Amino acid sequence: MKDKIAIIGGGNLGSAIAEGLINSQFAKPENIIITKRNISTLHSLEERGVMISNNNKQAVHYANWIILAVKPFQVKDILAQLKSELDPFKHQIVSVMTGVWIKDIQEILSKHFTIFRAMPNTAIAIQQSITCICSHGANDEQSKFVADLFNQLGKVVFIEEKLMDAATVLGACGTAYAMRYIRANIQGGIEIGFDAATASLIAAQTVKGAADLLLLKHTHPEQEIDKVTTPKGCTIAGLNEMEHQGFSSSLIKGVVTSYNKIVNDM
Ligand SMILES: NC(=O)c1ccc[n+]([C@@H]2O[C@H](COP(=O)([O-])OP(=O)(O)OC[C@H]3O[C@@H](n4cnc5c(N)ncnc54)[C@H](OP(=O)(O)O)[C@@H]3O)[C@@H](O)[C@H]2O)c1
Image (cartoon, rainbow, N blue to C red):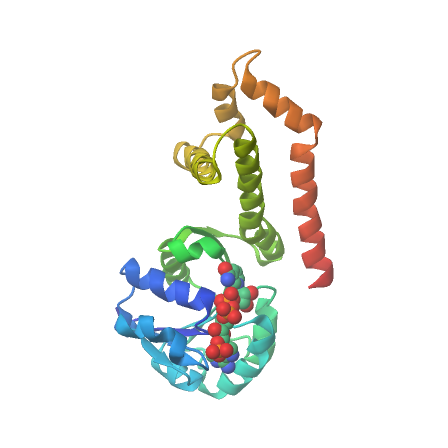
């Protein structure tokens, strides 16, 4: 592969991306360089053949794809230091930083760079993320490369940048919403007789199976619900009671509250 990838910020997300790219054989380890100031936490990646460094300039010099995975407040200083090394004819930027807009990066670098913004979620650690992506100045080949890259780490959807906050809520906060739903099921499962470990296994696998039904069969949730709800049966009785207690309404209100928070406060 002619492409070389630098991951600036080898923390949770940066390391998960590196691991996923090697596990999927999308990139050879020797084509990836990953940086952070304290490189002692990167030795497992080094053992797998990835180059590790505490020198961002060295990484940028080596690579043509630059994945920015530092905290949002750190990026301004880091990009300012790297500006003289970055060349819009060589480097393409992929930012996975929450709340950093393409125009923020352009203001520090220039408008001439191809810039992608990607919003994965924590399931990227097991290559099961949904990653929402938008871009500026990208051609088809570059878009395909970035789509291929994140497809190794789960699924990909291209969106307009104005939907990035909404993507953060639905895709990234969504993991926490799903966990709370599963936790509530576990609590209910214990009350009706299961021990915690068994309830946890049943609840998690049931949600995984339900999600896969939608993803693999491309059905609407209500079609799958119809298959489970016998007239006068226990499922519809439980579902209707959940709705009487505001189940869907509370979820929708929660999603909108998260969205308003991100738009107004961040
Ligand atoms: N975690 C997720 O699932 C997730 C999902 C979507 C988006 N994001 C976004 O991804 C970014 C990273 O998140 P994270 O959870 O991976 O955070 P993190 O674990 O704190 O990783 C950030 C890393 O940046 C390194 N760093 C700090 N200054 C640096 C510098 N000057 N040069 C190179 N590396 C430097 C830090 O290591 P040192 O202190 O050793 O330098 C740290 O390991 C954030 O902007 C976050 O909003 C994360």
